[in-house]
Structure formats: C-alpha cells, structure tokens
Length: 297
Image 1 (tube, rainbow, N blue to C red):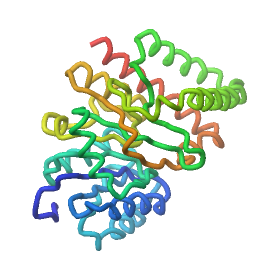
Image 2 (cartoon, rainbow, N blue to C red):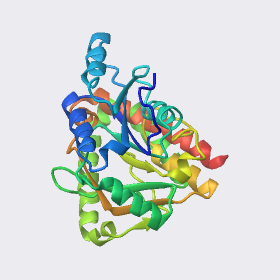
Image 3 (cartoon, one colour):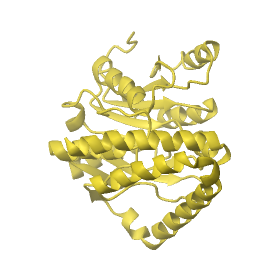
Image 4 (cartoon, helix red, strand yellow):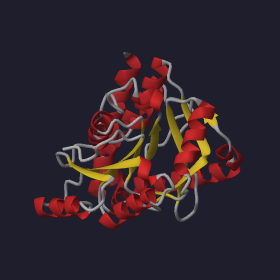
C-alpha cells in the first residue's frame, strides 16, 4: 500500500542483499541529503538467505521512516527482476519523475546530490546517467563500465569460455583465480594511466549497474528499467543496447560521486568459494546469451 500522499520527484530504489548495516548506511546517506524531503526510498528485499522471520525484522526496521517503503519480492529472483519491481512501484505508485537504482553497498557522499543530478540532466539531456562510482578502499573509478557495446563475436567468445571453463572446473579453478587476480591488476593499472578520462563527462558509454540514474525522459516512456531481464550480469550492456536502439542517450557525469564498498558480499564469496565462482560463470554465460540474442534481434 502506498503510504505517501503526494507524488515523489525523486525515488531511490535500493536492492537489499547481505549485511543490513550496509543497507542502513545507504539509506542514511540519502536521508542526509539537503533535498531528502523531496525523495522517496524503495527498499527491495531480495536476499534469498533470509528466513521469513528475518525478512519481517528487515521490513519493520524502517517503519518509522516516512520516506521509506520496503517491498518483499520473491527471494532470489535476480538483479533485473527485483529492480524492476522497485522501479515500477516508484514510477506508478509514488509518481516519481526521476529514479535512481542502486545496490545497497552504495553510499551517497554529497549532500547536494539532487541539485547536482538536476544540473546534470539539464546540461547533458541523457536518458540514463551514471555518477562517478569510487571503490571505498582505493578510490578506483568503476564507472563507466565500458566505452562501447560488446560485439556478437565477443559475446559468443564469452559464452564459450565460461562453458568450457565449467566443463573442466576442478582442474581449472586455481588457474581461474590467478587469471582473475591478474585481470583486476591490469584493469587498475589501465585506469591509473587514463585517470583523466574519469574526470570528464562522456556520452554513449556503458554505465556501471551499481548506481544508475533513470532521468525523467526515460521514466516517462519506459515501464521497466531492465528488459529483457537476466538473473545476474550483463544488465548494463543489455540496457545500453536497448537505449541505443531507441535513440536514448547514456551518459557519465563525474560531478556526481558515490562510494562503492571495497568488496561486496558476492565478490568476497566468489574469491573464497569455488561453488560461488561456478555459479558466477554459469550466470555470466546465461546472461551473455540473452545479450547475444538481443544483438541478433
């Protein structure tokens, strides 16, 4: 039930997973904004590991916050579907014109974030915007995620490599861990060499999914944020492809900044648990196949 009497100009959709204190930090960072009274927060509970009792506790945790609505969705339905539930609620039930979709491990560090968002929308005129997303420990820039769409050939290769690695996983696991570590090291070195790139605004990029801003131009036209839906991964490329096909503009604006947790629960568990890595590779292959099908349509 909608407990708000007037339309919300801005809504923040937070996908809860893992540590509740991390979610608290995200919620509080929004409530400390100068324009907090103009915002609504939709907290989507999508943690499959929680019992019904624990989910009741989570829902009751924010009852005293008039700006916060908690939505309990079917557990473990994945990033796209869970965020679409929150997006649709913010759009239809709250009447939000602009919707920020973010992970619960995002912290908004600018109290004037809404003012900066408004200035960015006015200046860039984009349909989907991404702020500067900085890793908490190193301030490594994580946005833009990419500067171009992956080609059909690259998508096929990604699917094949993940399927092949899964077929020989017990033998390949140590090598995969080394490859992951080296890839992260090379990525960080590349970002350091091109740090000036991340200090400038850009258009037609692939925005990082940890924090996405759907501007009024997008919200007015689109009933869902992510389509087609995937369980996890490749949502950014699918979203960007959809935007480019419809003539929508994507953009990156470093005047808006957020902090991203050093290591999310998912990343930490993948590095320490072979089963988690297998699951990641399986879902990557599945999602990349959906992306490939979208490219071929």
